[in-house]
Image (tube, rainbow, N blue to C red; front, top):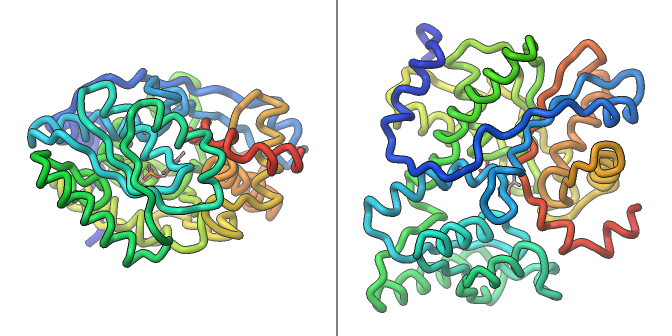
Length: 345
Ligand SMILES: Cc1ncc(COP(=O)(O)O)c(C=O)c1O
């Protein structure tokens, strides 16, 4: 079903503001011009504005701090005492949920998916441990085994008297991010209004945040194109964004159906795989750091910015275009990749 009419910004936000939310993020985040980065990319480069969602204020920040405002209220309403998480060492999700637990008096339990970045303990995993995460090592990277071990962890916590909030599969938890980015979109559009800019493209890592930008754009009738960049070689980003955006629309009562025509879902910049940077990832990280002191990372934003460079080089984006790049965070991750980064510099 196509959308019957567009809505105003106030109409978009009305049902979102009815959801329980505890505000603690540092908002609005800055929107910064990146002229030296543009110059370094050559005459074909678009105007680049960077939305600094890496600076949302909780334990190194990131896009997920916006999501956590909704999740915290939900966690409290349900009387949960323990957060369960299943992620790899480089996970920002695990670090930021542990930060939430530390700050608001909950306990955090991570089933850690084994990966080549487990040792030495650094970056996100080090921060999660510093903030008191209880980390259980997954015995293999086989998804079935991990799911079984994760369920065992939940059962154990419940038998110990905890009320568990399962951040991996709880239905509201998985769309909290898209709800948060409806607000994030309006915040961004207001900043763009002040600059008198109508952006052509918005680039960010594929996921719930991207789903929020896609849904908001369609409901508001905005012309920007969202590029939801896949950062691995396994998850199909189109399905992920479709699932999150359509479930969020239904949750909030919007009569709209997001389809794959509503956004771009590139898979080419995720190669060779999750947490495996390519030369393109490293080029994006080096250029952003050396021209604007922007810290991108080898797992997430290095890949989403590599997509900006790649689409420019293919001629899909040109000097007449304005690109908004959402810096979704991940800034502790370079510390887990020091050898690879030094070699690439
Ligand atoms: C830095 C960063 N950006 C983007 C994402 C994308 O996911 P979402 O929008 O669902 O948080 C993640 C998820 O782990 C992330 O850590």
